[in-house]
Structures are given as C-alpha cells and as structure tokens.
Image 1: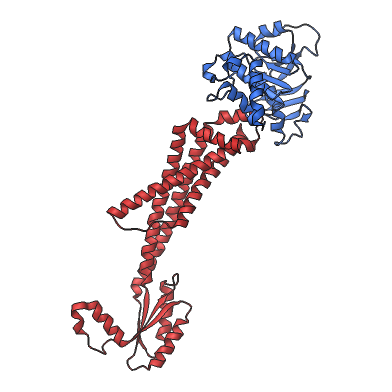
Image 2: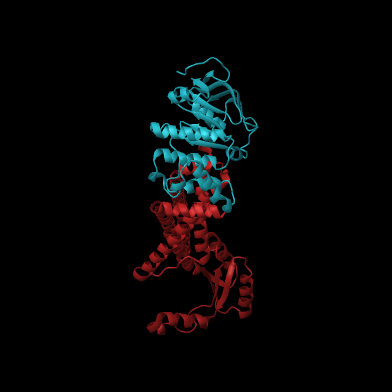
Length: 282
Length: 229
C-alpha cells in the first residue's frame, strides 16, 4: 500500500502541470454543478417560504356558539393534512386588520370582521387538489359562511414548483452527467499518459491489482482535491453574490460532504474504469 | 523448459502470425530466432511471456500450460522470465537503479533486499558507476544494459530478447551480445530474436528460422550445416 501511495504521489510530482490541469478540470466541472445546486437550493427555499403561507380560512357566521367553533377546531386539527389550526376571534381579526392598515385603522368598527378558522397544511400537501379538498370539508360545517384559500395563487405556485422541480432534475442530471464525462476523460488521459509504465509493470510481473492501486489512489486524490477546490470556488461565488446581488443560503454541511465524497468517488471510479480498460488492452 | 506444440496464432485483423509451430528450448540453452520482418519472431516471444495467447496448440513455460493458465497465474509466470526490447522500455523519470528496483518493488521484494540485489545486477551488466544516471543521460548500449539488469534482477529462468541490438551501433551490439552470452553461461536460457545475420553466423548457437509464421529451419533438429538467408 505504501508503495502504491508513493507511486501515486510520484505521478503527481512527475507531471505537475497535467495533474494540476486534471484537478482544475474536475474542480470546474463540480463548480458548475455546485453553482446550479446553489440556485436550486435557494429556489427551493424561496418556494418553500411562499408555500408556507398557503392557508385556508373558514369564516364563521356571526352568533355561532363558541363551543361549536372549539369543537370544529379540534375536529379540523385531526385532519391528516392539517399542520396547524387556529381560531381567530372577531376581536383578534379586528386587531390584526388595524395593525396591518396602520393610519387607516379607524375604518374598521367592532363586529365588522367575522371570526375565522385558519388552517395551515403540512409540507407536501399544499397542492391545489388537497387544498380544495380541505376547503370543501370546511364548507361542510353549518356555521361556516365562506372559505377562502386564493385558489388561483395556489395553482400558480404549484405549477411553478412543478416546473422548477422538473427543470432542476433535468438540468441537475445534465450537469452531473457532463461533470462525470469530463472527469472521466481527464482521468483517462492521465492513465493513457502512463500506458508505458503500465506496460512495464506488467512485463516485470506486477499483478493487475498492484498496477491498479496507484491509479485508484491518484484518481481518488484528484477527485478529492477537485472537490475541495470546487467547494472553495463555490464559497467565493456565494460570498460575492451575497455582497453584491442578494442574500442566499449556502449548502447544508451534509450536502457539502456528499459533494466532496461524490467528487472523490468519481475520480476513483473513473480511474478504475480507465485502468481496467487499459489492462484489458495492453 | 519452453515448449511450443502445434501452436497457431491468428490475430483478429490480419492473417495467421504463426502456423503449427513446434519447438522446445531447454533449460540453460541459447537460441536465435531469425527470419524476415513479420515472420512471427515477436509473436513467439509474446506467447512465451503471455502478452498474447495462442489460437490453438499449447505453449508450455516452466511447467505451466497456456491451455490451463489463469489470469492470476500470469504475473507469477512473468516473474520467472526476463524480457528486453529494441526500444529498451525504461521509465524515463527514474534512474538506472530505480528502473531496476522497480521490478523488485512490484513483485513485493522486501525493501532491505532491494538495494544489494540492484547493486549486484548493475555491476554484472557493467553499470556500477552509472547507477544514478537517468536513461537520457545514458548511451543506447547502456540503456539496454539497464533493461537487461531489470530483466535479470528477479533471477529468471529465461531471458527473452526481442531485437535487443536493433537500435545499437556495431560496437554496442557486440557488447550486449557478449553480455547475453555471459548471462547464458551462468545458467539462464536466452531466446534472442534478431535480424543480425552476421551475429547469428559467427555465434554458432542454435538457430530457429521462421518464415511467414512457420519454422523453416531449426539447427537443433537439422544437423546439416546451413547458412541462414
């Protein structure tokens, strides 16, 4: 193992420009993917924030007995879709309206705004069909006058989310594929550049496993270094974006770890495949 | 020790490289493989060190048969053979001693044993004073000596030489040939493919002549004196 490691390090030292080029190519492929990922993560967070506001309001008829409303609130809270159910009394509704309107607060008189039951749905259950279904169930209560949930808005949001998810998956897959192809070719070039060495190793009786080991270490190290460099580039881009364009969210530590492990694995697998093919050929 | 029995080798593209070749090389023997380009000399050497497999027939080397040889056995077999080529095949970024040590390292020789073995074999090939030279700092003849040292360092049963003097001037060629004779004298079999008919004529060793993939003359089988063409 120590010899394999030494050989891998020797390969870096012997062709520093080619090695640096491989690492940089890997880094930029991953960087492009990471930038896309950053956009995707932030877009998702933004959509999530908007979606959190999806809410169904059931307006209660004046004069309804508080016990009936309380019973209904308990009932609605047990809906599998419901995340949060709260009762807004007439007084609270008035206070809220006055607070929101500021200098025009005087336009509202007591008793003008009805009490309501506000229902927030669980994440993943905020699609138009579910929202409509919960609204229909709320309409079923005798004391409910009207149910509002901004139907058009919910539908637009859902469409936007569907498009963003589909585009994200397609682009993400394409970026990842391009990264894998570029990294694979880079590693393959590095292996080809050392075909003579492979030939000599075989000639003197090295086993295939022995020949493979330094290349795997080299590929892994290149992937790891490329991944770390891509992370640094992404962090710089993120900071610049934060300073000059908009405040965004960075990757969670788990995503960073997955990215770096993926980079290393692509390097490792790329090397394994390239050397394997080469060993079959020579 | 090396036995070809009705060996035919057909490359996927191109005609047969060898057709029904049979011969036997004994332990400690020296033999020339001669014949024009494309006659099949290199193919014979490749079949011996398993860079190729026969299409039919059997190649037996040190008791191992090409028919039953598994991929796992190939490296072990190669460690019993030394191979040298016209183009030396040295690693350009390593010194003479590192090139030789490489053959020991890849076969898992303990580190402590590598230094003395490398020094011994480089002395044997006459390069004791140039152990730290890089290949490009050495003459063609010296580079071939490094390649021979690398081939010898694992104490092979046989040394396979594919046109070892093809890139060398006459003086260097004579030196390399003498070295191969010395190696043979110490008990290692040598099978040398060559175009150098003058060398073959003067050396009086066994000669196996090939033409279009077939053995057309073997001095061991045919007692009649014959001048190779």
